[in-house]
Each structure stands twice: as C-alpha cells, then as structure tokens.
Length: 365
Ligand SMILES: Nc1ncnc2c1ncn2[C@@H]1O[C@H](COP(=O)(O)OP(=O)(O)OP(=O)(O)O)[C@@H](O)[C@H]1O
Image 1 (cartoon, rainbow, N blue to C red):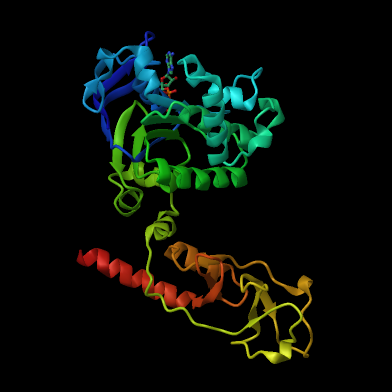
Image 2: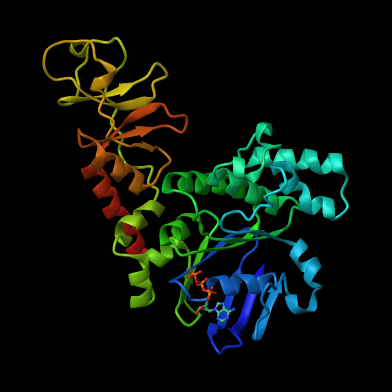
C-alpha cells in the first residue's frame, strides 16, 4: 500500500503544488489521480519515488516512510511509465526493456529471454525486438514503456499520462490491454491523467484533486458518479455522468429476445423478421450488422449490411446494452455471448426498465 499522510509540497518560488494530501493506494489496485491542469497530480506522483521530496508529511510504502529508504533501492521497487514512453533512442526495443535488469547484474541471455516474454505480454512479438524506438508507432512505443517498467517485476507502478500521446482509438486499445494485464499481475498502481473518462474506466479508485493541490474526493468510479461530494467534483466528472454511471451496472436479468438471423447467400424471403430489419450473421453466427429485409425476395449483398449498430456482450453493462439499442437501425440492441456468437436482441424499453430496477435497488440499499 502507498500512503500519503498530510503531504505538502511548496516549490522554492512559493508555489503550493500539493497541500496536506492524505490518501491510500491499496495493494493490487489501480488508483487514479485526476484533476485540472496544475492541480499537483504529477508532483504528488513523483514524490512517491522521490523524484521530488515532500516539504512536509509522510509517504510510506507498506508502512515504511520512503524518506528512510535508500533512493535507488526505493526506485527499484517502483516501475515508472511516462508519457511518450521515454525510451532510449539508440537502443533496440529488447535492450530498452532489458536495460535495468542488466544494470542490476542479471545475465545477458536470461534478461533477453525475460524481455522478449514481457514484450509478448504487451502485444509485441519477437519481430519488434531488434528495431529502434523510432521504427515503432506511438502506441507500440507506449507498450514498450510498460514492458520496461515491469522488467524488474516491481510491486509498485507509477504511470504518468501513459496513454495520452496516442490517438483515441489506439488509446482505447491500450487501456483495454492494460486492464487485462493488470488483472493478471495485480500491481499496486498510481496513475495520473487529466482525462476523466480514462480515470473512470481504469481506476479501482479515483482521487479527484482541485487547484491548489488538495483532495476533493476519493471513491470508486461508481460511487463518484452516484455521489459527487461537491459542485467542483460534479462539474469535473461531467454532465454525462448519468449515462457514464450505466457503464458500471451489470444486469443479467434484462430479457434477451431470440430472433431469426440472415447470412451470406440466404434469401430475404426465407426469414420472418420482427419488423423490417434482421440481424446479419457470418458463418460462425457472429453478428455483423442489420439488413432491411422488407421488399422483394432477394439474396442479400454485403453492401446492404447496415453497420451502425454496436454489439453488446451478455456480460456487458447497461451502457453497452443501451448504446447497442440506440445505435441500431431497428431500435433493438444486438447481444452476443463472450465468444462473439449472436444471442438475441434487447429493446430500449427493456433496458430503461432495468435502469429503473437498479435505481430502486440502490435507493433501497
Ligand atoms: N519546479 C517547479 N517550480 C515551481 N512550481 C512548479 C514546479 N513544478 C510544478 N510547479 C507548479 O506546481 C503546480 C502543480 O504542478 P503539477 O505538474 O504537479 O500539476 P499537474 O496537475 O500534474 O498538471 P498537468 O495536468 O498540467 O500536468 C503547478 O502550479 C505548477 O506550475
């Protein structure tokens, strides 16, 4: 556990960057520091590995005051991922990952093998190993940054805006991959971001800071959305918070209706759809989109498939289901199993009913 106990930082010019911050980052969990520009997020994080020393207060790792630890020994226990990855430009990818373990005296062959394995875990196969950072995309470099931070297998990980230098689609991919990785490795992580969506998606707990370096609220994403402590937090988590909160509610009682599907080579006249639209599936019964089957009997062409609807997983959230229904041309949301196979559809009315039920449960509890 990383603990901040009334920690402050006043820079020599008198700027109060962090003011009496008390916070616990529990073991095996991801704590996100989020807040407006200049509110002291980075300063707070860098005080953990003593890149910056606090002016007052105590930061401890598993109960031990970091000031009492040797700075180098401390940093070996704390992996550090920064924006733009910060890779050594003149070293190959595998050497970037293996650099620190080598420095610590581990054998060449063993560190190379471990580095290759780590690269594989972050989604980079052996063909990347001997390239240089400039030969990789921003997202790939960021993955190397994560692999490098994990190379000495530290229990703690600090991540400073790790996914902000890439475009939104790559960012989402990296976030999803990182969540899968963290489910496996369960590090104690403190991450800084100014993106509230990222904070709510990744954080087990989210600490919202305000200008002047004070803590406004710390809570789980769902708690934060349901009960912002004051107007600042409410404003910061945004006006879409009602919709965002649906992203944390699972309800496996929403009624999924089976319905006929259509596939390649099939005639529209052979199916009885509920209305004009039918779900189009591939040979493995995976939904690809919707087809308007009304009109003369014909074999469906691929160009006719309407791709506007999203697919929600049965294990997904009410937000996924609602999004699927709202984006679908038929008004019915497509639901697939975890293997991607078509299960059935849900109507927006059913989902709204589920939202109402979940509210009643929350009020009652
Ligand atoms: N070395 C420094 N000397 C003086 N003031 C500093 C120094 N470093 C940061 N600050 C100030 O301390 C405050 C907090 O900075 P910090 O970088 O921790 O904020 P942040 O929340 O991470 O901001 P951003 O989201 O913009 O990166 C800001 O007002 C900043 O200008």
